[in-house]
Image 1: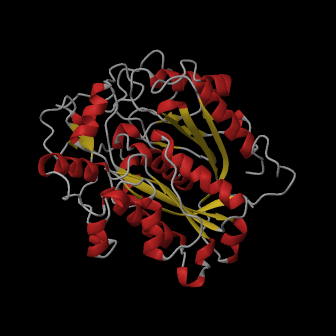
Image 2: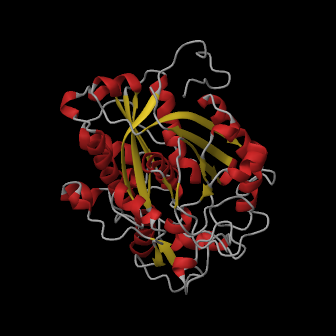
Image 3: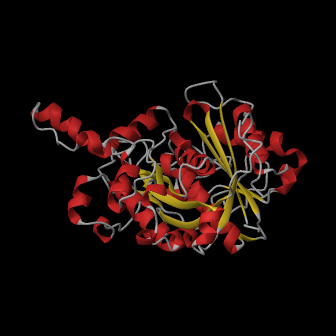
Length: 427
């Protein structure tokens, strides 16, 4: 019921507010709204295809999960659209949808009590790439004056605040692939400590560029299944050969329960627990025994006041890399014991790829949707399971299920881990 306290919390003797989700906005390679995205996931539809944003013919990996048919001027005026990066445009679109879904009328709210914690791991890397080329080919004096704010990871939150006049706490966090989840965890802590009544929290990313993908190719982290892109992202499958780069965004409206009740807001779920840790093991590889992941999962259960047997579903980090999938499987087994074999686990990255800083936020949105719709998205392309990955990964077809409590895992480069627990709201 979300009544637990953080380990070592000096306020643990106080009754802290419950934090609920009242709205969701999302856009992804399978949809331009939260509903379209979830419908695409439930249908098991892949959003992976050949890269269209630049000529990728020189790269070993020439596929990605691109957001299709996005029109920024549907969500902001043309002047603002020109001045901000695609990832920041995504964040405004997702925030607008989330506030509308939450019925959040800003004219009736104290905007100094609304926080913005919408994060990006990479920010406007495409713009940085073009400006570097401008500098190298034309020399100094030709750099765009908006370069500094456009490449700052804090400007997703900053531009949302500017768009809507939100003067509560506003900042970003950046923890590679755990960024979106850490943003939600940060907002949760702020709301519990009374810094705000409402928070727009999540992640946005758009970094499908030649140099960025080439860097991951150098790490041999990306799938090179270019001839069959829809089958390229294969978490937990023996034939997996890396993750697929993607873009997208998701923003959740989080509120204290008291504030949500006062305005008769729709309550979609409760964010009841968070867990955070660092492997402190390697700059890219996870600890081989998943010790940091275990610590984060156990902490999330503790802060939610739950036991391992209470969890009905786990949304896996599930990238489809050779090393990380078995480690996550091992960590789940360590955390849940024999119970691990009866918990459905799936990875939506099999359909939409890995959107880095937006990944955890899109997965959090998916978890809330699962609770409300009673159906679990599949892990597609799971045709030949890796013997080291022997849990119930909901292969290839969505599954109807009564789901009340879900865990969402995000494990990043540098061993930066964040785990969230969402529950069906109960008075």
